Length: 153
Ligand code: FES
Image (cartoon, rainbow, N blue to C red):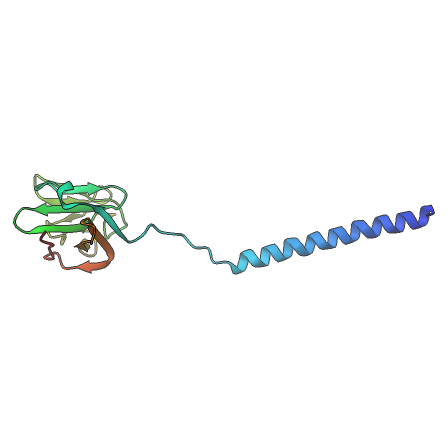
């Protein structure tokens, strides 16, 4: 192989490698563009424990699920969303006035979740709670129920 042939082959190889890598990068960009950018949410239906795990009286706040679980001796179980309907802050439930207060912009929700003081545009959601076959309470955030909904166990 003489010097001229060697340089022809070298430049040819470099050019081919550059072309292949450019096509590869372009294809990767196209594939990434076609893939949806999806945020995976936690499951909307989940078990929260057995009825015995929830004492009567003050609601129990489940941090990760952002719900309040009420266990009334006479009325049974009910589950309220802890997500403010204004901009999604987590509301706090006060036993002293039995209301939900949003720390972000001051919305106040009555015991049944209805808006008493804005800027929240609508009431808090209440979710269906059922008893699963294994004896655990199951909450389904996809099923919004009236605030009067109760599960007697
Ligand atoms: S997020 Fe609750 S009042 Fe604004």
